[in-house]
Image (tube, rainbow, N blue to C red; front, top):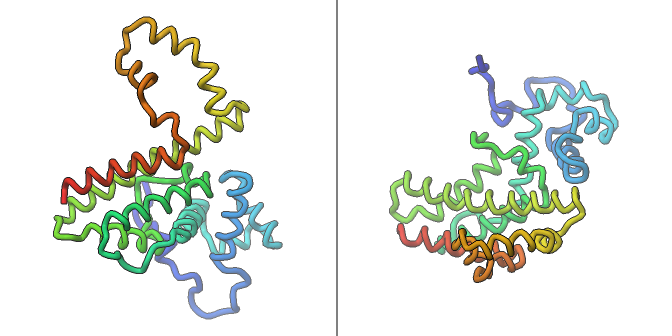
Length: 236
């Protein structure tokens, strides 16, 4: 049975009671973990590796970060903190949501390991709350709060799905050495066979008529984002 009394790391003061000044801070530990994960992946960001980078023993870090789950929550909230948004919505909901979406994509691409830790259950870290207040506030234009939640989740779903696919394509490129163009060339004989068979008319339309697959990733993302924002606009 899960420990229902477990407390979020964000609810636990970094320094509890009196005593000597801590040698390290959660921020130092978190920043070291993020650097390691950016360079070598999430699994490399172990307490032992972080301690070596900081010049201390691994066990001493557990005084500041009790568990790996706590560390991951701190790491995720730290990189969310890199999203550059104003203190409050500007009044232009479309521009505000576009800003959050584009910044979120940039954050994921800069820290691909985020895709391995992104969870459905929120942890309400301070940076996550800041972005939530901004994004939800952008749509606080008289809508019921459930509608705001649904529309923001729709936008987040588009961003997460799209950028996760970008990250996976890049991982496949590194693993196989094949670019997207290389993969398409290798697939072309089978694609021609499918087209000649005539049994998949929608697939044929995608292959023959769709411009989206041939756009650069930035343009693909922007195209889809504007369609999602159009859908949100229809609900306002």
